[in-house]
Image: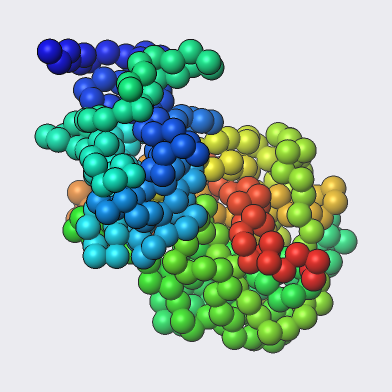
Length: 151
Length: 246
């Protein structure tokens, strides 16, 4: 039976910068395992900046682009559109891959579909929420301490 | 200060983007003809209906250095968003500059350091020098994309339109600290209030007073000035590719 946790603050307090993930607020998100899964996404807060890094795949499990601290380092035709408070990464066909938007410089929202190595959906936005569907994933981190570990 | 100015005069240029109708300042880094300026000096920004930022870069850039005018081209990757976020642009001129700047180690720049700004404000065709101090060193959200923060030097040095892209120079050694970028937000607030005032009472305000307010709106500096730290621009791949030659 599924258990839903909503409105929790994981390693953050109200009024602090955070990511909204699965209706919770956290300082850190990791999807996949760096170097072990082909896909990987890390969202962290460093020097008071929201920083997204990782490797994004398409639904065929092919690498679309590598991100490092919000900047595209390598891509297969992906285009980054900047907005005043975030950015969108679109594939060569113009479809949205990932969108990051900071609300009032405080809450960072993620949109898009994160595909796994075999094209399975790892996480996606649903009705304004960014939902994790498959681990491994980490929500919240403080040093070596982990908030929630999935899978 | 005179020695720094005389050494610098051939290292600072007046930039004109004929197709965009914009002017600004820039300065040489190294001996290979790379001139650094603000991104907003050589581009026009539009925001489309989806909120996406679109940039049109100038294709007709000329730079006046000393008494001569040279054509310039953009040397950095126009598709990269890094120059946009950190508001810098690298131009290339097919000349070997008579003078160029060295870069200060940004980590040793301190509040209170005396600095000078050299640039081509307003309609000046001669370089103008002003001086002041580093008033504060802050990390603030990028004025282009708030996701990123920029190390910024606030200075009380007087700069006006046209100074954008010019160097902020440490007086003690003549090295560049930052790129003059924009006035502090305080000026926008004051400008907005004055504009609202004269627009709402257009007929009540005597013409000389109205003209004076318009003059203030255009020319007078209110508050401090932002200079983006030089460290972002010098990390542009164009400089890494050309290391050893400059």
